Length: 248
Image (cartoon, rainbow, N blue to C red; front, top):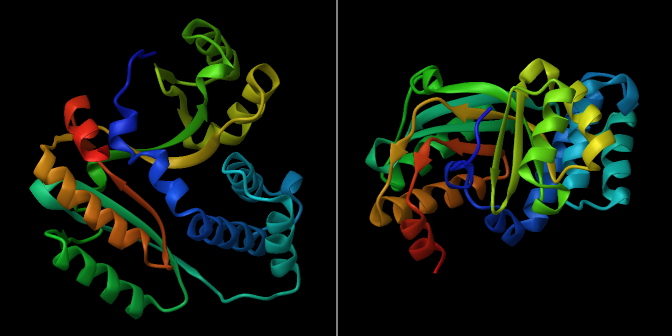
């Protein structure tokens, strides 16, 4: 299991999500409704819905919003969404994976392609960058959850594969198929997580300078501004100095 991590670099900063709180809640609601529609509306009987609810709670989404999203699926409301993954390259050749839920495949594909082109990237074929990532479960905890050794022991007992601890918190990694089981076991030792979700974890990274990062952030912001886009993941890595300049 690993120690120090650059995960905060690879995933764009949580603070960026805070800025888009209303849009984030909308995307979380969509995931909850879809998960409930595809399976049982009872989270205890539907692993995907249970994870969606956990993630929503971790992002401080009000309980009323969560209940409303589930009731929407029970009432048969909402569009029939299709899940699509797009892959492409951003500035400096950084790999980008875009996960979308859409009721109009042509509209979404056109918008995503245009967004890549306008922001110094290009949309590729399915699989064009996917080989640079692996599907994993990621459970995030704040620093207050415990020191690195405490979190490491809890992760081992829960059946996790890896732990990355930094000054910003802890990320516990597991096989994608084990996420529900591992996150439930961790709750018993560490309490409720900040985030519990399936992610694309880069196996190779692309080092970015300040100019490249500024361009990449514009691409990510534009993609995330699309209501059809649920998640954007890249394999960028940048030094602390570059990230500090970017945040400033």
